[in-house]
Amino acid sequence: MIFSAADRLLPDLKHPRLWLSLQVFGMVAVGVLSLLPAPDMGGSDKLLHFIAYGAMSGGLALLLPNWGRRVLGAVLVALYGVLLEYLQGLTGYRMFDPADMLANAVGAVCGLALGLGPLVRGFRRIDAVLG
Image: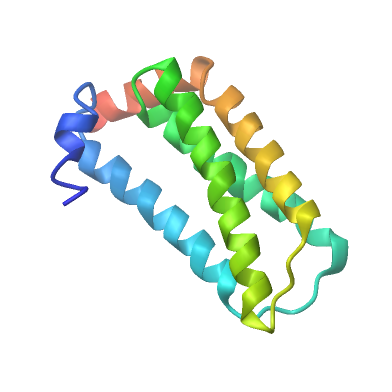
């Protein structure tokens, strides 16, 4: 359903279903990996949180057509991180960590910032070349 709506949601892209599929796959992968048992990495996983949520937010910023939707996308990515942290706390084998939520939110904001600059033009060129 969401992929059939991609053409309507992303009218300026030649391959909206491809890009939306990659975005959804990345977000699902982050969710699954966040909820699977994992070795304790201590505080060293903050950079991974930052990168993952920056990539998700940046990807949405590249896809979405205007500033308001891009900001909303970054907010939703950060809220996704909050949700996953709470779910981790319920698993019994993962840990709820507010510092992870902060790393997720900072990553989402940085991803938004990166997705607003020249990367958008480069992404649009790549999409056009694939067309």
